Length: 82
Image (cartoon, rainbow, N blue to C red; front, side):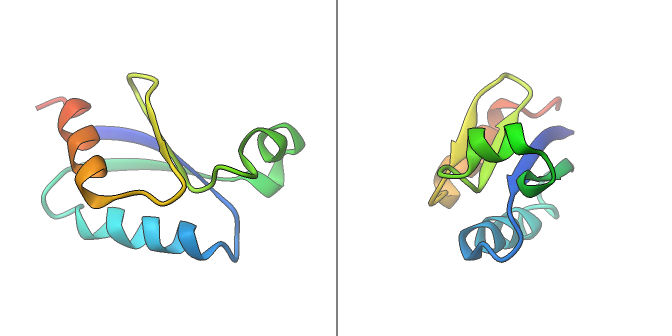
């Protein structure tokens, strides 16, 4: 199981693309996603508004912006409990 937090903003096309990529990998990996809308919290908005989408993994590492599939696959492997 891979647990990650997905910081996004509604209407963000990069966020939509990142979510589609993540959903496409859910057959290969068991992924639990905590999805957080940064517009619901002023502090999160200030922190991530120029970086979204952001995937934050249990080891504290992140992927953000234009996320590449190869980078996401590497992080999923590194953070898998299997």
